[in-house]
Amino acid sequence: MSTTNGPQAAFCVGFTRVSEAGISLDQQVTATLVDHRGLVEMPAYAVMAESVTSGAYWYTFAEPVATVQSWLALTAGVRPRVGDRLHAVSVLAHHDDAHGTATMTITNGSHEVVCAGVARAVRVGRSTEALRALDKDAIAQPVETLPAPPDVDTTVSTIDPDWDGRRVLAAISRGDIARGPLCELLAMTVDLDDEPVMTVQPQPWMANPLGAIQGGVIASLIGQACSLAGQAHTGPGDRYTLADLSVFYFRSPPVDGRPLTLATTTERVGRRMATVAATMADAAGTRYVRAVANIAYERG
Image (tube, rainbow, N blue to C red):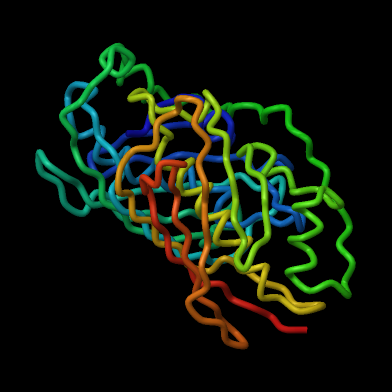
């Protein structure tokens, strides 16, 4: 479900407008959203992408019922920059009482397409007092001023151009270089084994009204894990982009103090493209989310 809550505020998302076709949202791209390279990738705007698609379905109901995302697929266009104000528009392609499918486009101030996507949300039977207390009309009141960015460490280290990707990740895991503002915001740490493994300590602001990690935050977390897996396959001077991301939501990860692990695997690596996957699970082995991503390379 898409509500004005902690996740949207943390990612500077707001200005909700609701129509019969779908909804729209805006996002201010700030220095808190760049990665360890100082670049803005798909995980930086995943909360808006998920919110605008799941919200298109959520707003079809008269009362604040419980809906969750079951699938989200995104493909990147032009790369946003710090200072951009992004605009996301969703169109509800199909819906009934059980599920809804929406398409989505994000553009920048120059009307260039930053990202396109499609998602499916489903209605679930559970509810909470926090959900029932939501005022949908108040949430849908468009307020043009977007939330201010949170206070996180925005340090971006200079990366030696002679390092390959595994050396970059090893330096992040040891703390020799900064993990980047987005990882700071997401409370994500990086370890390097045969494949990169990330650990996240879910924060209270990440929760939706059902007490689980909001679907857009999940997409940001697992998208960042895939991006770091892509870094592992760079050579000195190589550049890479998270080009496509498909997120499969199995169950809702609770925000209850338990840490979560995002383990990555590499499915193929070519000169121009790699395919990686990531899985979010807890210490008991419960799998919550899986994602598959394409990484595009510009080899040095």
